Image 1 (tube, rainbow, N blue to C red):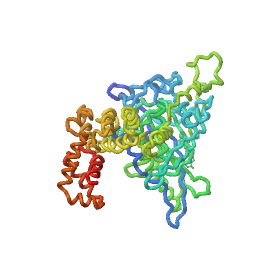
Image 2: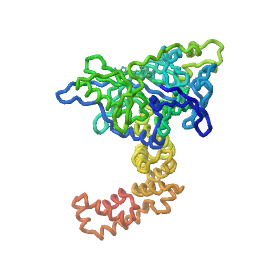
Image 3: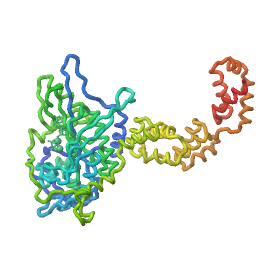
Image 4: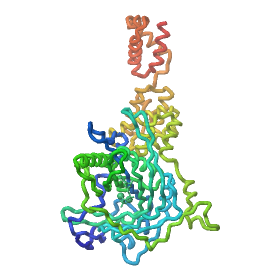
Length: 556
Ligand SMILES: Nc1ncnc2c1ncn2[C@@H]1O[C@H](COP(=O)(O)OP(=O)(O)OP(=O)(O)O)[C@@H](O)[C@H]1O
Ligand SMILES: [Mg+2]
Ligand SMILES: [Mg+2]
């Protein structure tokens, strides 16, 4: 392997370690694709039906697939885990690097309190036992983007252990029934992120950006309780929503704030678990599901054709849709773990164990953090179903689309309309328009108050539902008009004048005696025909139910 050299790179003329050997492998995959493209991808996952566990072939062996995830989430914090450098996505390369992040001799780690609090909060939200004493260790491996030659992590005694995450999966074709499942969480550990290796194909060299080096990560290790890509995708999506609700990570996969390693094996039911392969650095939920399902099939084919599974690290090639071995980790890697000598044990307290007379800012009190836990996504969904009589799948959609729940709640605050009506307009009409125009919720040209105004008019029967659609389309054009203004400009108010409506009904009946006769003989189509004729005469501004009433009264 070639030696790293120091060179100047980037607009700010900052230094970077450049790895001059073009054949060096890239363990860390830098996020690719535009942010907006990825956001759309993330949004659509919930709507997609992902492939599920492999079906046993006729006459063939039955295989059970086992999946265990390691999820890395970047902690939302202004500074890194052990240094004061700022944390920010897409800053100029090597502009956020302190001497400690670059491993200059003589520098020492100083633990960031915010990162510890985030780990405790995440642990509590995931029903973990929080260890009042945890330890830091050095895990050694050699990559250009890891200047110290080791990562500080918590291998021996992590901050949180033995948790669980409950998630819902839809069963049946119509997604009408939901089953609840639980995955166990083995541990959550605090650790440093590495830098990024950026490969320059033209110059055949790899440039190193250390902005990410030392950013605080939560590694959440899940027990091997999952069985297919869809389950893994659902778990990661739920975890993403939990982290976002807690504010402990932005968990945006497109920006690399949430990265998943998937461990996969297959075995015959009743037999011990098979040898696992590890598909590294999956940074999209859709790719995660596809990679797992592909890897399960690959292992089954390999075993059925007499081959063996190697305990190897693989990566997912999303263009080819398959997993391929990574060259960097053949055989079991020896990380040469050792205690981190520059960090004392991390000691936490709860209210019962708090030393007398200690200042609150000097210690971390687990109970205090527990008191600040926000409502978690599962509880929010249950509340939506309970309070508003919403279907479970609607509550999922409201939470899955970034910002949609807040939009819905703002409309609810301002309108008199029934929750069911609001749900239907937000999910069927507004979301439909947003998707059609490829817009995120916060880009909606219609504000919650504008929609609330429209729904109020509908609720008070001032306009018909077809007029409401017309008003919605006008509001969508975003000309800063309220629904009421549009209604009066376009004269879309429902005709309330009972006398005028009676005259119109009378005249229509006289003009169509045959239809009236049909109506009187009980032909149900006849009355609808008359209603249609009267509405047409009012330019669709009459309420069909009111017309029906008048017609029935007049023909009685
Ligand atoms: N037979 C198996 N099949 C599938 N997954 C497994 C199996 N055995 C263990 N796993 C999963 O493998 C993962 C092991 O993660 P852990 O962090 O403990 O070790 P590691 O992968 O060796 O280390 P590293 O953090 O360096 O990747 C867990 O998510 C666990 O659920
Ligand atoms: Mg791990
Ligand atoms: Mg692993």
